[in-house]
Amino acid sequence: MGRHGENIYKRKDGRWEARVITGYSLEGKACYRYLYGRTYQEVKSKKMEFLTRSALGKQPVSHNSRMKMTFRELMMEWLDSRRGSIKESSYANYMNLLEQHILPELGRYSVSAVTTDILDGFLKAKLDSGRCDHQGGLAAKTVLDIRSVLLMGLEYARRQKYPCSVENKLFCPRNMQSDTRVLTRGEQQKLEQILFQSANPFEAGVLIALYGGLRIGEVCALQWGDIDFEDRLVYVSKTVIRMRNLSPDPDHKTKVVIERPKTACSVRLVPLPSFLLRHIAKFRSEQEFYILTGSGSFTEPRVCLEKYKHVLKEAGIESLTFHTLRHTFATRCVESGIDIKSLSEILGHADVSTTLQRYVHPSIEQKKKQIESLESISIYRQDNGQI
Image (cartoon, rainbow, N blue to C red):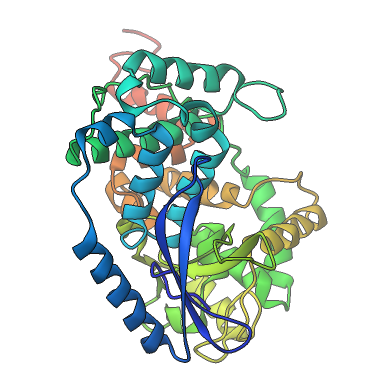
């Protein structure tokens, strides 16, 4: 198992292995030095000693070397500098964006030759025809992620005094939020009928998502010890995700991990209604057992989604994303009069505007009800039909 951010792994033969980047090939691939030891502490000490010797032996980078640095070398150096300070999943995501989009088209440029016009043209092209299967452009959200990686790399170049003339003003695509499906009240009743009648702990987990607004990864990571039945709260502090496997010579291209949620605000206390707690208490088990499985083993989002869609089919509802439950929860809260600030904190948003823009979907019935309330301020009276 790897130690997060250290590039230290336990091998199948029982030894520990540390990897240290010593440079990059002409193709931009990292060149490694491998160090071995019988224990984690031994190999870590060897790595620190090697890095210390390397640092003492380094010479200042010449002006000519800086001028010849390629954009590939810059971005790989930036990414390596972030490894110990970001989540493993974030590192893997940055790596994917670099390998799939940025380096194939921009890697050959020298850093000094990269201009705002070049980067703007690159981003616009990705938006128009950036998919590998040639079936159209990338989603605006993906292009925005690529833009963020470019900006972080360019900021790193400026800090290192590399010859970079590009400022932070890059083309920024407008991320149009698509209309998100919300369960109608009739559909919610059908779904709840199936969920409340089930004797399976998985359905109890789906109910928590429906009445707590949890994301699919957060539900997968939820353990019975995270629920305070006395204070009617659930503590959301972790999430399950599938990510690229960055281990050397991995047996699988991806792996499933449990880590902290995507933002600090996502770590939160979520109140649950009493009637729901009384129901899920029937499934209560050991503190360390996961709610969806009823055992010490967790399930991953991909498996959870398949089971969820089976429940929808049983309820006679079309196939929908698990995130529909989160949107439905937010909409029902607004319809019930819950203030937006409280709802935003329950959902784990850093900004109330995120809640308003993405998760509030008033039904047409709710809109009609609000419009009818205008009668109270009208000078027209129904009793005589006169103004």
